[in-house]
Image (cartoon, rainbow, N blue to C red):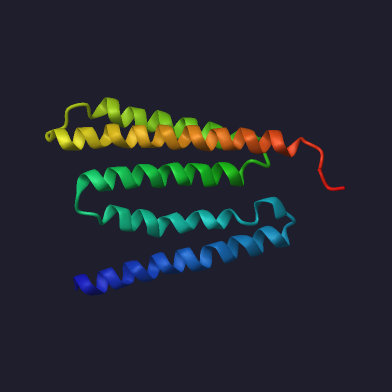
Length: 150
């Protein structure tokens, strides 16, 4: 019975990951929302989060889930950057606040290694957020420059 449940779970996840982006793209294209036609790609993270949650070691699970949440916030921010140019940065800051909340909430876990993994996760997320924000500001600055084609 457990094997059938696992197969059905994988089929449902694969169905969502493969079919949902196509349905969203067709709906957006038919209604003239061409700027948001690729928002269905956010569903690709479902399978990544599923596999990250299957990891047995809690330390690796926490770090990988933190990096995946950072990438998810970045992708959603980039998709919504047509509304406001600062959406990626706002979502990265919200993600940092949530990661800091996890560090504050779990300062001393039952096992010190797990408590340290939340801290390592926050540091990795902070470093990647600063780098991504730097490149986002660099891209915004470069987009205002005139073309150098002669």
